[in-house]
Amino acid sequence: MTLFEVWGPRPERVRVEVDGTAHPMTRSADGWWRADLPARSGARYGYLLDDDPTVLPDPRSARQPDGVHGRSAVHTLDPAGWTDAGWTGRPLAGAILYELHVGTFTPEGTFGAAIEHLDHLVELGVTMVELMPVNAFDGTHNWGYDGVLWYAVHEPYGGPDGLQRFVNACHARGLAVALDVVHNHLGPSGNYLPRFAPYLTEGRNTWGQSLNLDGPDSDPVRRFIIENALRWLRDFHIDALRLDAVHALVDRTATHLLAELAADTESLAAHVRRPLTLIAESDLNDPKLITPRAAGGYGLTGQWNDDLHHAVHTAVSGERQGYYADFGSLRCLAHTLTHGFFHVGTYSSFRGRTHGRPLDTRFVPASALLAYTCTHDQIGNRAIGDRPSAYLTDGQLAIKAALVLFSAYTPMLFMGEEWGARTPFQFFTSHTDPVIGAATGTGRKAEFAEHGWDTADVPDPQDPETFLRSKLDWSEPQQKRHVELLSCYRKLIALRRERIEMTDPWLTRVSVDYDENARWIAVRRGPLVLVCNLSEKQVTVPVAGVSLLSWEPATESVSATAIPGHSFVILENP
Image (cartoon, rainbow, N blue to C red):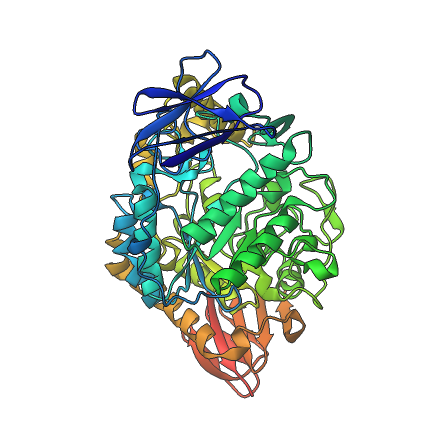
């Protein structure tokens, strides 16, 4: 027998259709409808609300073989399919993350094909693979942030069984798995949840209606989100979750949803006897997210640090448009390398107001902040989705890598950056509703037209070629022009792993010197010092030591080091 249950306080009658036959359901006082029925694995089912003949998918569907508009399928992961009984997990501290999009990581765009490239990540030195969202969304390809059935795994990637095999393969190689999850909105196509219950409010954020986290009937909505997160960690053996845009979660209750999730995750970690990690994406520069609950915070493990990305990118590239306006100086870079955030109760010209709050390093180690030179956002949300490799020299790319991998923060790479991939990563969708598809393309062009871009240059998200252009070219890592950069990444990661100074998580042990005019910066961590020359011409820096690693050979003397343009050197001076 299979228990079919769905929370549906809005309809007066709910029936479950299983393989074409409708069955009545019984409603309990709390708005849940249930029916215990015989059903084979793979049986197609859905719900009929009141007198509407439309069969709707299960809001908690485990599998959607025919897409988000089709019927759900009865599915349970095979316990015998797990091969990772010896896996003990990995903490965030000391990790090297690698963000990838399953659909564009390989030509095939599947979990199975991604497994074939895991050894490359192991050789690179990666310890945790971060998947962009794999929940079920409308169409065949998408970034994944338009999910509408959060419990199901996108079928074209390989469905739930494919994800299980991928996690097994990662754990067999010593790789932890992080998964990007989106709980701040639902996608525009295939969202049938409001037909069942008040999942949404009248409030809106950038991407759609807000989730009902603190209004009437919000308790089951909160559990819907928390149980979804725990499902990935428990049922799929996922090691970490990246929580998308948590600043868009509007929750005015005494215990914020994130604090509640952190407490439940901690309980689950004790039960499964391995570390479980929660990493927030936040636009707030608010240390409360990663401050322990005992110290008044939410107790999340980590969060993305866009300030460091902006500080590194602007200092190296010279770009200053949009939200980069306040960044670019070496003073800014030095402050961010030693204080976590740049805006810490300071004026943000992009926002037109004071922004952020300082970290309290008594409670928050630097390893709680993720550092990166590229992410899906920082590439894909550019007008043409161009990577830094399209407009920077290889030496500048190496400097960016060194600044991140030498920092006290937890590094994260974006797929292909390690060899300076020349393929773009563009914004792509495949909405089956032509109205939504057209609106997505029009909105994208209008957004960049406001910033002075020629709309003819902005790719159409609905054009299949936009998706195909974004796939990695796996012949590139073997090409001569990419080999040197890939070797540099491997050596930087190896040095980080070998030297305890490079994983020391306390910012109080990091110091920075710089010369704004000569364009050099020196980052000290114990006896090690990273010196970067951001200018095109050779500079002599008053820092001495023995060279451990460099992009171009540096010339050392007793009291100084001469560094070629667009290059770096890591020195040891005990």
